Image 1 (tube, rainbow, N blue to C red):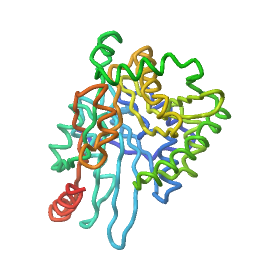
Image 2: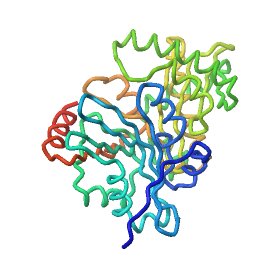
Image 3: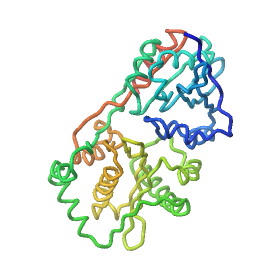
Length: 332
């Protein structure tokens, strides 16, 4: 079989449209996410893998960070295989690895975030990638192939009663907003509530609110949900939506929202909208029963359908580098 061609994507190419056509299109492979990571200090590149006839077989957006003599390369939500690429998945991954020209101290990580296909998994295994899973790589999923009546009847009794209480409150207005000006306003409210939440609970994460604000407001892969009580914002949800899966990305609320059971009503309306738009899964955004029991109990009131996330796949020319990294990351 003739070798494949890997071409760095020019800025003139509509990357958003190229990714959108994939069955596994997702926010992590999007141009906006790449720009976010670039502003955080990563070098971000995009490539297209093609055959000798010029047919596109795969697309990959990857991030690079140098540490002394080594590089860490991370591909999130990709490589994406085209319809023709699925039949040559092993060769597509081989071409991608060769393009990276890895040194012996370099490490390549591929994380699909639930958008991994069977063909991609087989290709990763064929090339000696090592999967890494930690306790935090689990989530709860709502099966949207059911009717809303069935989903509602399966809710925990206390959860359902609290939802009914919130539904009777005529002062609560829930909107899904799409215009950037409205999203800026919602994001600023989210930022204030999220900062307060982090201080109250004492947790840390990698979200840079200042950098992400502009990008999120214009990202069509994201759904913004804003909840107001008597005109005042009390909850903001930012969900990632793809063809088949909606995922809670970030949610923040204030004390007033929690007193009125707004988080339950807001989540229920988000589940309804995801089903209306044809999604088959609503991902509640991860669980950590050991260290964040309260959030786990809230989510478990909706469903107890536990799903393991797709692993972080690690590859290096040196099996020692790969295995040491896997051991460290597996203890997160």
